[in-house]
Length: 403
Image (cartoon, rainbow, N blue to C red):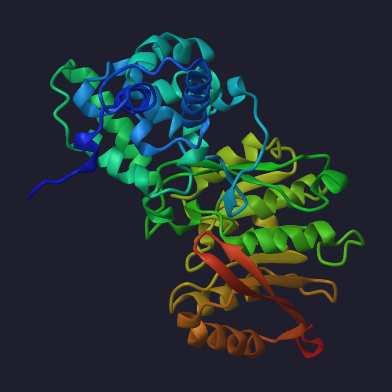
């Protein structure tokens, strides 16, 4: 047998009707008259309706669902907001839950009559809102999404078909790993963040990730270093003026700004628009400036920031080693921009990736060659989108002989 798909044999309303047949009809096809037996049957039926939502409970394509039904299903399947490096766990009202998925109570109410006939187990606001959580970590939904994408949807108008394909493609890409995920907003929650800054959380827009634009992703190193800076209530690490090199999505710079410091954030030109948007999104504009800075060609940055020639008291690097050129650039830019004073320091947060041991060793050697002295080093466990990760935090200062 070829082309077998269990969904092809499913009729959403069949489960309920077949259950009634089994409960109320004897082998001789005669109705059972015992009222208590009917009550038990109704209870069993209700239990079937209220159990966890299954992929077979979603409207099957063979039923030719209208556009508004398919769009609503595909929107409610949107993954939960990313919180730190895992899904969010906030308690939301149905209205809030649907709003996060570009749906309203009214829109869902409009499709309930159709669902009551064809997909009765998701034919209420509450049960409809259970669709998303039911499939947040399930691979079963991939089969459903590919079924939608493989269907010609020839009962719909062409523009409607394109809308549905686009929505289904987005839901599928969300489930294909971080590198395939479309634009989304990551919510960052840190211990003592509210106590130190008055902010409940930080929101970071992350465009689709590509190999040449790694700064468009929030990396675990920035989370680890941000937490360290929040916990530093004695001001041990940060001394103005402060320059972050390779700010990425802006988490560290935004945290530093909310801690009350002025900071200059820098990155490559293709990263800068998203960085500026995140600074604005988190109301950090007053203390966080964003500038273009190419580590290998810093002249344009110096021209636009003449005070940078005086040097900075704090340089911040988060995850700066991901190519063979990186160690040399980090060491050179540090030598150029770290102020010549006893309180000037470099904060380096680096993930311990097994494939980059040589680059890390090269960086440590170059830092020593440039005249920097290691004054603090810590190793700790943490997370990134790809799982558990070890990190090393290092603080460097000028060796006294170089001052």
